[in-house]
Length: 267
Image (cartoon, rainbow, N blue to C red; front, side):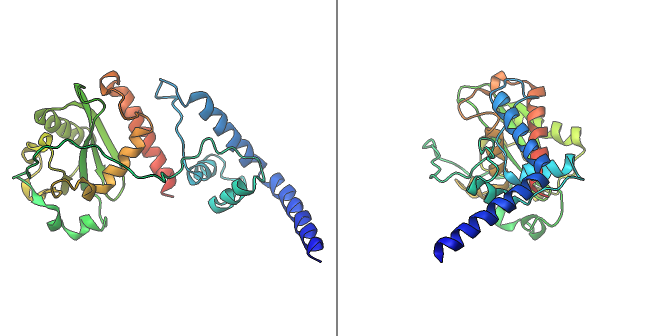
């Protein structure tokens, strides 16, 4: 009896797979083309061609965007197919969550708190709850310690839209970079959350200190939204790679790619 049930289930699975494969042939072709492009361009030095790993949800939403009239499986169905190897879909292109512990090397230096900023615990609820746009987090991304340049990154907590420019590491340069981002994108900043890094000591000259909020000392995770975005940046620029070698144009291409990806997975 058990063998009969197993045989019946196996036949039903094959029949289902054949029917669905014909229905989803456009999606399977799209998936294979995306994998092929990823393999050919994952190490491309040209940021306009650079291919990065993405989630299954991003691929599903991208297919729906480009082929709105074609049948498309759900994200959960894709993972079931990957598990059963039903359509022989490659997983090379997929980004997986890290399962190991994350260790961050820090220099043993005495860290002081910024004087011209309000503790993050007093930040308004609309900023904490992401109910309205205009509440931002700012940070810097470093390549090598001896680099002349770094990236100044700015993120809207609600829309998750990223802005970034290349900057010198000095506090004056970071201040000027923030002014540049605000002017070029016509931003209206209601609140800005920063850490206690020395590069941020002049930001109160740009943002009224009543709207400037600081994390607790050694608690940069309190502005977790932008810390998470940095993981996307590292998919383009790995740790230990010098920031000096990248142009402003390349950085903008990277930012556009990240924003497009975040828009895909937010749907």
